Length: 206
Image 1 (cartoon, helix red, strand yellow):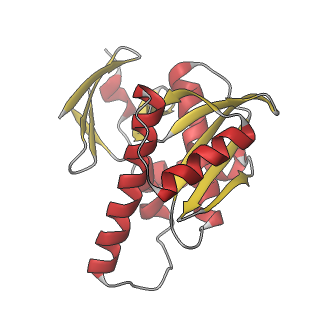
Image 2 (image 1 turned 180 degrees about the vertical axis):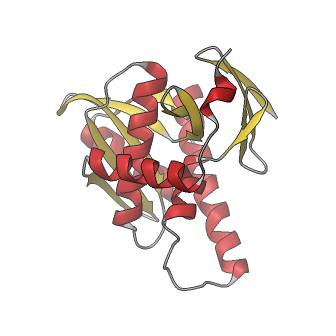
């Protein structure tokens, strides 16, 4: 269990079960919000295959984070793909794996964690990017997920996010994918979620 102090909130993050506790109250992750309101329609895949795919994805992210935070370079074909993409776009990771809080009417309704906030001389401002190594990208889900992360990051850290990207790596393939900004879709999902799971806002007033 990891403990953080974020915006005067005590945040506990159970990475093993991917659960967030904010000020003693369990809140869903942003991914869980999306799953609740917009369940995946992807065909069912064998559990063992999903487990292996998740491990490969987590291994890649761990290699990248070790490189970005500690300068540790792992000699692996997918790591080489990342380094090539990083050099091509001159990416600078300015914030790695930040925890963000998503607010509605001043109340934390969800929390989340994404891969990186980045800067590049080729694009004005700061961007959010997540790393994916799946065979195919679910662009609809990525758009919703990253727009919610954008909203939450801006609320939590008071810094503007100007663009959204996906770093897609698989074997020696790499691509830096544009993800559209869509404030309305993110707002609509939050409204639908709070309508379905209404909070007693008065309980948060001292």
